[in-house]
Image (tube, rainbow, N blue to C red; front, side):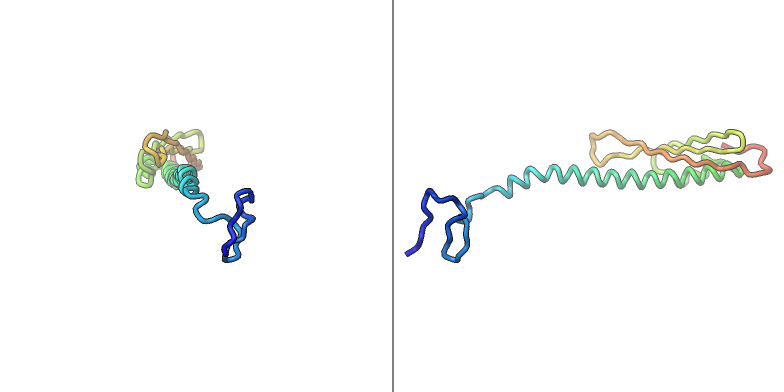
Length: 140
């Protein structure tokens, strides 16, 4: 004879034929689907944020390399804009300022978030170089 769980006993207190405690399978059908539907958008947003952060960090490093190259070239009497344009990220703006015995280069570049309707971020990098002795004036 098979023992049945009385209706007034809570789920989990009855012992089944194989000795396990709990309710029959199927008592919580659809809970995984509901949890997945609630958690998947949060997971996708986290992934989108992480990929955008990696893209911004990569663009920042490229801006810093461009600023260094442009500052060194301008301090040696060559065109800093031309020297930096080769390694600049897409859409970058290179600004060179000469003040006394220093050359300051600022590079700004937009970073597109990985969503079509999200606003753009802008990363900035600055490098300073001393003007080489014997150069009458640095070239911007």
